[in-house]
Image (cartoon, rainbow, N blue to C red):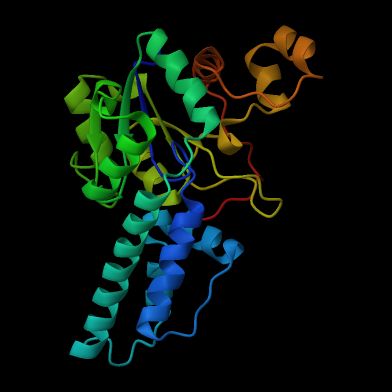
Length: 268
């Protein structure tokens, strides 16, 4: 069963956008007069649960429920969201986030193998275009068969962003793989019938993320994965520096249906 489509998220998968998002959240809190000053750990916790583009929503959810229906509360939520988006766009326009080396390796390998690529992200279209143009030039749309922005990962009934990517590319779900780093996108991909890979950074407190069939931090090969995919190659390369997952390794793992082991911590 070959892989015919790889669907990637942008935040933390294609690009390292963590610092840009964290700056945008802090700036939005400051403009709103909120006494919040997230550090990297707090942002990562929020991003794993809600996705980087909506990490700020965890702070909104924590606001007192009393009075949230009134106009001033609604205005606060709206202003926070607007400020976050504005600061994020300004940051990525001033300094383009780095393309993740693990993605670059996998993208080139997959394309040379005839696999289609898709972007499925909850970032707004303007941010997506800016990132892709800065990262891959004006011809970025030639690399990706479909780009889904502003994704609603709560949509169901065949209307999810992953369902859209499958229909657009003409690929059946069992021949696709979705690679994300946040629970909402991973759950949505699995509901669409797609095998999933979580690429959240290594965290000793979190071994895996809910909704993932496989955990592969930042697309780096783990010794365990190499042994499962190709024991002989793993033995030869055990002393080599860090390596990134190539298309062949990913295909082998997908065929063997390797999943995270029971007992590895998950987050919802």
